[in-house]
Amino acid sequence: MNVYVENHTEHNRCWVRMDDWRVSFNTAVEAQQFVARLNARLNAPHSLDMLAGWSPRPGVTARADVPCTREA
Image 1 (spheres, helix red, strand yellow):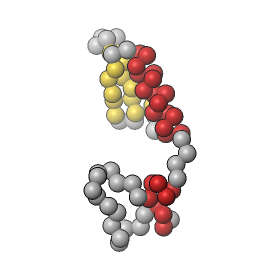
Image 2 (cartoon, one colour):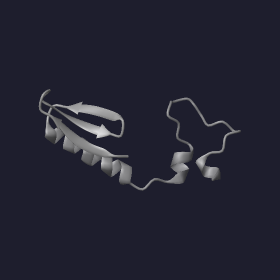
Image 3 (spheres, rainbow, N blue to C red):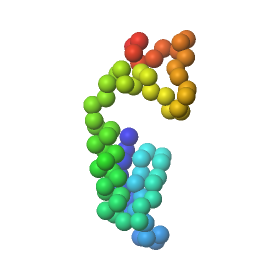
């Protein structure tokens, strides 16, 4: 994922770009703090066991007929 801060002087805003996503911040400091936290989380070690049970929506579980990370 490409993550970077973009200063937009016309709108007096800072945007953090994450590939096709954009998040607006009032100050460059807020934007940099967000990028630092996001990068720390992206670069943190992740367990395959933790990822195998993950669901993007609460209450939705993996289907038995679809392979998951644990089986890979």
